Each structure stands twice: as C-alpha cells, then as structure tokens.
Image (cartoon, rainbow, N blue to C red; front, side):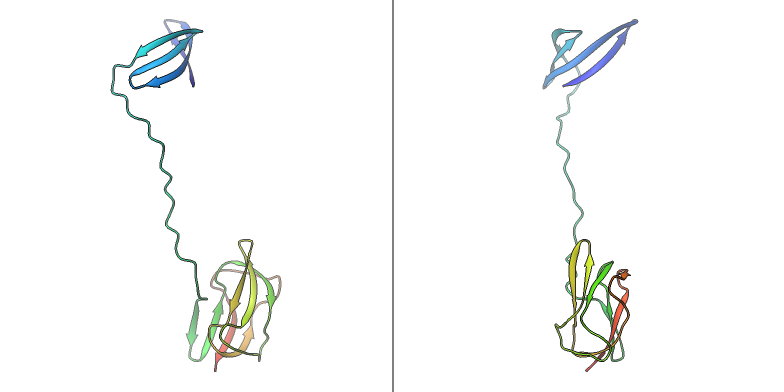
Length: 141
C-alpha cells in the first residue's frame, strides 16, 4: 500500500493506494474508499531480474614463472601466511604441501607443482602477502 499527499486548490488530501488491478485502482482519500479508472496504458510491473556476474573458474594451479630451472611459487590470493612446511635446501615432490595461507577466511594449501629443491622461502608466519607475490623459489630436479 502506497501513501500520497496531494494539495489541490489549497486543500490537502491523504491518498492511500489499496489495490491496483489493470486500469482500476482502489484508493482511500481522507478515510473514504473510491474505485478509480486510470485512462492511460498501465505497464505491467515486473520483478527486477537479479543479474550476477559470471564467476571465473577457481584457480586450480599456482601461477608460476619459470626462469631457466628456477620456479617462482606465487601466492594465488592476497592473504596471511599461517604455516610453512619447508626451508631452503629441502627436496620436495610434486604435490607436497609447502605453505598454508589464509585468504578470505579460508585456509589454502600451496603445494609443489613439480619435483624440486627449495632454493629460498621469502615469507614468514604471520606475514601478509599480495596476489601473485613470490613466496618461494624452487630449483627443478
């Protein structure tokens, strides 16, 4: 129900729209009910359609850039480092857990994509990192 105030020739009227069916409207003016016919085309009210953006597939692999035989392990999302499972000199196999980070209130495991030796870990526990920031370097075996 919608409420309106109209001033016509200095007189104020309180109008409540009770019901609308096609071009017939039931209104109440200052407490008195009336049926009113609308003389122009009535557009059908449509419920707004919620349009959501297309979500891209979640990143399945950590993006890395190969520089010769060195792999740069990058943070897939901005977040905070929670645990580090490797140190420089460690030998890792494909699928081994390297680092756990919190991003968007979820824990994300960063795993080795290939067999290799950890050359350098560039983060510490509690450190905040940005998306695509290099968090470790690894030599391929």
